[in-house]
Image (cartoon, helix red, strand yellow):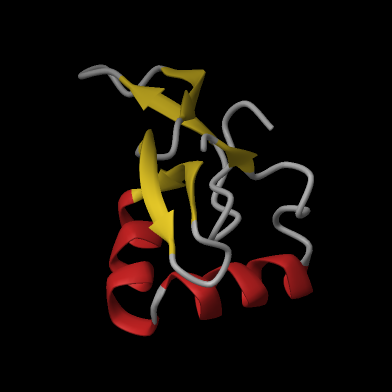
Length: 86
């Protein structure tokens, strides 16, 4: 799961670099991913997630537990993919 958000499922997209003379070459648009630690109150532990900026806004809006449950239900991550720190 290298370039995929564990909450929203966002991943790299394919597109074109367009020069001034309108020549097109293929490129990838990577998602805005970063690794962040969260305190998971329901399990009383710290977890580490690889999330996008949109995933972070979603966690702030609906909460960590609900965001994780919906991500697991939609198949974006498994409970095994979530790294428990302590």
